[in-house]
Length: 196
Image (cartoon, rainbow, N blue to C red; front, top):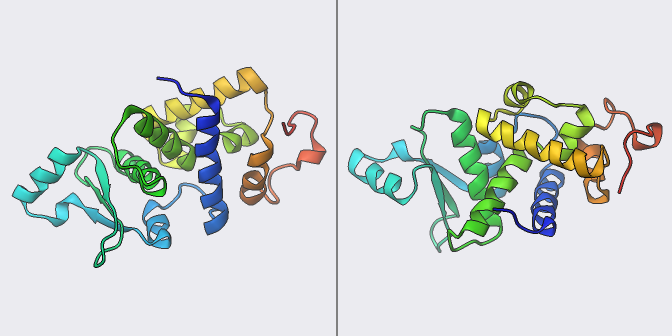
């Protein structure tokens, strides 16, 4: 399902704020380190005995977050026994979005936005455009994404380029400046990339 472009922009701005707040400058991003910096507790399903683990899987096959209580911080429970480590990472980023937005329902809108948030977090669209990355295998190897997530990230890049060319949005410039301070060309030096 597709939502308004402003909804996706809001998710992108949220990710960019996190990158800037925590000085994230390289890929693949360490999801455990980000959670630690944000004060989120990460608990793998394997930390529990079989019977309890089955209840966790019943709640979610991948991951879910529990709001803070008086005695515990916000906690993300994640299934560390899924086939793909990349899927585990993606699920954690997905749950970070739910936490940051205080999502209480698992409605299609919140989940779609969390999926977009996770993809953008792991492989930001303007960074992929800026670096000229246009294939799934590079995204998989450089950003630690699954084939499916990399395909969707590349689809976002191609859709964006079809509509806006290689333009970088004004709100994305601080992200590009953070990620490429010296090794990317500057916006002023290129006529191919412009800010919209």
